[in-house]
Amino acid sequence: MKGSLTIGADLTRDVEVTCDVCIVGSGAGGAVLAAGLVERGLKVVVLEEGGYFTRADFDGDEAKVFPMMYQDRGTRTSADIAITVLQGRTVGGSTTINWTTCFRTPDRILEHWRSVHGIEGWDAQTLGPHFDAVEERLGIHTWPIERINANNDVLWQGCKALGWEAKPLRRNVRGCTDSGYCGMGCPVGAKQSMHRTYIQDALDLGLTVHADVRADRFEVDGGRVVAVHESVLDRDDGRPTGVKVIVRPKVAVSSCGAINGPALLLRSGLDRAPVGRRTFLHPVIAVPAIYERTINPFFGAPQSVGSHHFIDRGPDKVGFFLEAPPIHPVLASLAFAGFGMESYEFMSRLPHLSAQLALHVDGLLPEDDGGTVSLRSDGRLKIDYPVRPFLAEAMHASHKALTEIHFAAGADQVTSLHHPMTRMESKADIAKLDERKYGSLEHQIFTAHQMGGCAMGPDPATSVVDVDLRHHDVANLFVVDGSVFPTSLGVNPSETIYGMAHKARDTVASAV
Ligand SMILES: Cc1cc2nc3c(=O)[nH]c(=O)nc-3n(C[C@H](O)[C@H](O)[C@H](O)COP(=O)(O)OP(=O)(O)OC[C@H]3O[C@@H](n4cnc5c(N)ncnc54)[C@H](O)[C@@H]3O)c2cc1C
Ligand code: SF4
Image (cartoon, rainbow, N blue to C red; front, top):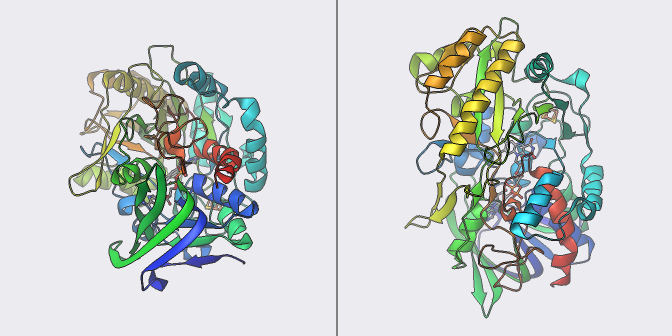
């Protein structure tokens, strides 16, 4: 390895470094970009606020994993606590703990970006070679239908019985052993997350990575970033140790992901109007059901079947897509369960439980501008995300669709995650859902796909970066992560971000 990886405990005194490019964040966007820049002979420093962990650290202990590798130790929520926000915080970013589903950006979304947001040069033909390259590097391939687990089989069988569209999904894995632990870091190194692929490639060629180091702000002078100011964090409690790092780059890149990326720009005084606005979450509802047969939803490759049957519900309605997550005890209690006896009953039947997800495609209706990231008076970030009537209507519709799938697949009892729950024992009971309310704090909602907040676009009044991902006001600052999407995608976002970062390599390199 020609490069170097430093962790917080090794940084005991203030440091100042110079480089060609400083990238903040080592996830889907930051890693692919870093590898391309190092390949082009540039001196690159990556800063990552999370720790560096490898498969030797991934022992499947959920109680350990959330504090270790998730933002806010797994407790991040919207300000009204209505939405649980799952997001990674480790070298490799959310890719270290994600569930491996990969999709290219749908043509209809690229066309929407062109016709509604004026984004030229982001068509399937231009992106194709970038997707080809990342698919090759990350081993992205369709998961064989004969290897889907029992939880995915519920979605597959239910859709088939109802005549609804469903397909096996593509995953970025090599040598997967079906353990089901993707969300806790792959214990056998099969998942092709960024720390094992692009970050490692770049380290082999000379990349410098500082882990446990949080970028506090970009210092901007004369329309250029002149320094990135960072605090070294204590690995155990996440608090600053008092040691400071200053990087003086020719070009700076924010790859902190949606939510943290807009917050970093706001802390840097780069608070032009659209920053933090149009934050999208693919808000998720989950519908659990109890089966007589054993499901063991914690075992086997997660998310290997998906349905886009309801993706286009017409111009006035929010579409949604369906997937089957892994369900381990801590995740189940974070995202699903109620309180007291309800929670006990739910958790004690985990081996017989299947849960299916509906992910809602926010940002496509003209009146849907999603949520907002802003700063509290003490500098901490704040996420506001109202569930408006058009989204609540879609949640009601998706809840009914998932309940139908469960009954078609042979469920004994389907539950709603309302407070209190509604229990349904036959198709006739689905009508009970019409009496329930949908929206914030009415039922569980969560997100694992954060997008937007630093939208790209040609118009500085409505976007933060241009279509080459360069900041409209700061010539040597780029944003390369999921925050630049002007809408959500209607598919899992990681491959779009890999492809986008691959495309950005030449533009960022030419700015040095
Ligand atoms: C549980 C879970 C399951 C998922 N499953 C899938 C899936 O199956 N398929 C899919 O396509 N997507 C999935 N996703 C989402 C996907 O992984 C993300 O959309 C994608 O990784 C986002 O890429 P990014 O570069 O925008 O940010 P990230 O990959 O999140 O990387 C951002 C990095 O920046 C770091 N950072 C933030 N702020 C700072 C700062 N100030 N200083 C230093 N570092 C900072 C963070 O710690 C993080 O490591 C999942 C996400 C989660 C949480
Ligand atoms: S299911 Fe496969 S990719 Fe996921 S953690 Fe297990 S071995 Fe790794």
